Image (cartoon, rainbow, N blue to C red):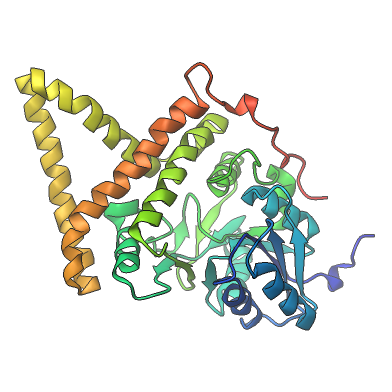
Amino acid sequence: MVLRAETRPHISVVIAARNEQEHIEECIRSIMEGTLGPEEVEVIVADGGSTDGTREIVSNLAARHTNVRLIDNPRRITPVGFNLGIRASRGETICVMGGHAWLDADYLRVCRDKLSEVGADIDGGPMETICKNTGASARLAMAVQSSRFGVGSSFRNFSREGPIDTTAYAVYRRSVFERFGLFDERLVRNQDNELASRVRQGGGQIWMVASVHSHYYARPTVGKMLKQNFRNGLYNWLTWRINPASFTLRHAVPFAFVLFLLLGIPLAVFSPVLRWVFLCVLGLYLSLDVLASIEAGLRLRTALAAILPLIFPALHVAYGTGTLLGVFRFGLFPGGQGPEKLSPRDGKGGVR
């Protein structure tokens, strides 16, 4: 049965979550307590087999709010959860997010209205990285992920209104999924970047809305932050293999840095000219590292900021090493698990 337009919520929020009991209630409440009324918004949580209290928390909220629903994501893969939620949604516009974040009260209303105002297909606000706790390790992880030197110029620190290549916790016109398909389910990570590149390739526009923010909780320790970025880097190569147009310079720089170290060190040993070039480039990098560390340290106001010059390179090496290993796992080399050997994309064909 096709719903009449007037019975549709204005916006559906699809959340893919697994074992997010620490954050999921705050995430949903930030939506429910926003400036849109309950008749204007629905929340669909696609749970990937949580073993903590996530399902119980969502079920309790659904029992009190008719516009909150819990569905199952049996494959436990983020883009699968997104696609299941999108297919189950009824909104004219759809916001896709994870359970590790929350939104400004005006986020959904402003982004929905901005789509019509500027004629964009996708939009979203800058993402602010914050700490769940005040522990030193969490604050250091937050600092490097909020720095342009740490993560490049992206939705994490891009605050100027206008076109952008992708955005976090995006709000989509429903027609985007009908025209360009859903998320590629071969991508455990980076599925939003790949879809955004398809939209740009097809002539669509993505817009940064500077006046509202999403808020993402940094990993609680530097070690967990490095592990997360290693995995992000690993799936970069698969994303590029599947859709070369998804390539962006900021994602490739850590890969180039790791190659520079691996090749530059032995070459510098045998060639005085290459040694001079290597030392100059490395000196420039370390100078930027120190300057970025001073800037981040002034915001942190803690003596532990003195180790930031070690954490920035660790972040870049973790991300770049992940991409390098992705070459062996997903591409170019015999035995690699390239996209042709993975399950077919289930996102083709749009929403039903």
